[in-house]
Image (cartoon, rainbow, N blue to C red; front, side):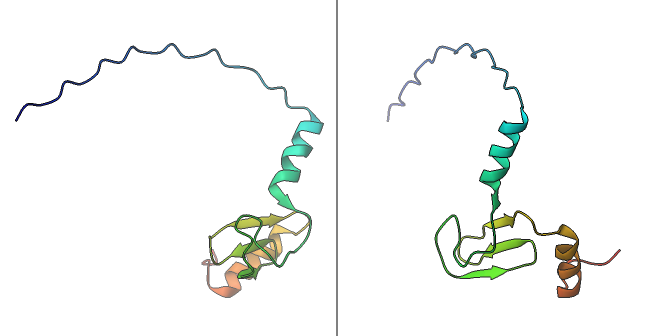
Length: 90
């Protein structure tokens, strides 16, 4: 049995990096994409209704997505995780 020859690939030259200026408008646009405006009953990724509501997150039980609620305090989330046994109090 004869082995096939490997193709020789010419190395490519990397393209020069571009600089993105972070303005307040750009930061707010990125934050708007990351956070939910309020608690929802559907997953933003897979549109499933099999979601669990946490104090600061919506947790999809089907795909595993954790979507952050914009104005929810993380202190309440931490207390909820400690009381639920998901985190060990230190």
